Image (cartoon, rainbow, N blue to C red; front, side, top):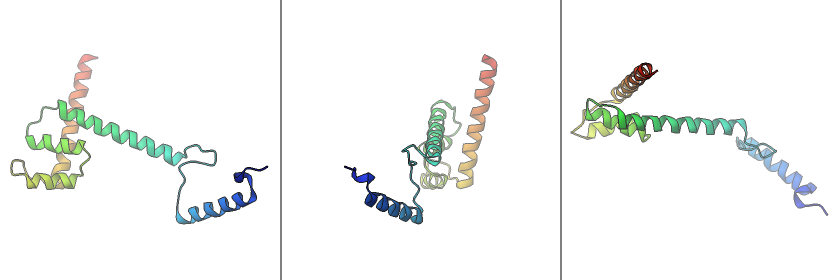
Length: 128
């Protein structure tokens, strides 16, 4: 006796639904052999890279000698995944912090990361 998924009825329904899904723009995460597709593998890899980036930013928040509390807050919020626009709004709402707009927040992050990388490179050059 055939199992249901081996019947003509199942195969017809399966083909019909796969066609409907394809029409709707649906992309399956697995191929017909139940292996992850390249797109899914790429997405997982991108996620891992993103997570590693934010973990590195958190490390910088812990180790970097900030000159201003505003800079520390910017990097801390960035390490938590807050958008640059939201960080700027937070700064403008807090009277104890320097109110910066989007470009100012972006500049602070870029400069701190550049400075941290230079210090890390120079200390590894000395050690090596």
